[in-house]
Image (cartoon, rainbow, N blue to C red; front, side, top):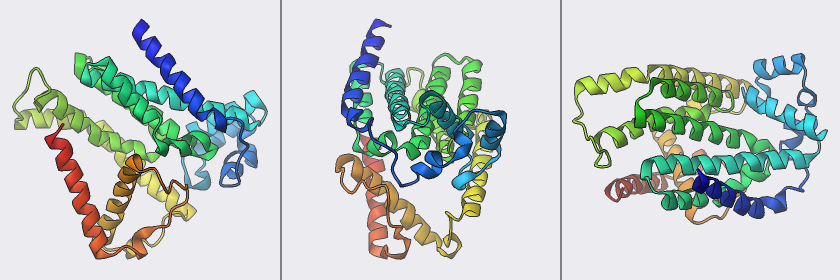
Length: 309
């Protein structure tokens, strides 16, 4: 416990130093005033505003826990931007520590796990969610994603069903922030492979139909939650006007589009340039050749990761 506390304090100190220059910033015109500055619904904690948080799809999002977090900040700091920035930074540091705890359960090596969490915490891609108040939903989504992963890893370690229940509750709370938490359903199957069938497992099992059915049935509540969350996200985003023309895209164009963004994020991890929070949508400019190259590179990245796992 002492060593883990030291690791947390080191992560806290490094990230506080790195992001301290953004704490004194004010709100910016890009969404901050829409989300917080001019949004009277988050400027006080009341039953009416709490009801609004759980019933609204304001700005295309169903994110009640996000609005409640803004209410708390407004209550503490009377609307001062510095409180919102400090809150963002605290969530980010906790996320980095959750990455350490998850990685340590997998690698069983504190030093390696520390460097993984440190690398995650200082990634240039994290600048946007940490210093931009409107991007807190990404931080909160990350918090519940890593917390959900931690509970599921503990469940795989000791087979205690209560941690599977905690896993579901954590994922449910994440769905009340941002729909992208649904990707954890796929991560669960990857963790199953890691713990049951890979060379990592001390009790490597043979994948049988019986085991496959058991693992699938175990995840039915998560799959149902994912379907509901995705459907709700599409409805709210379409209603707001954030999703358009997607019906005009062919399957090939959709695959190109997804490949483009996956590769773009991978590229920004190693070459952190063009980090603007506004991106041009590429579906009407991307060529077939680029699309094929994007897909090939992603497949290469996956194969490379599998071979040298």
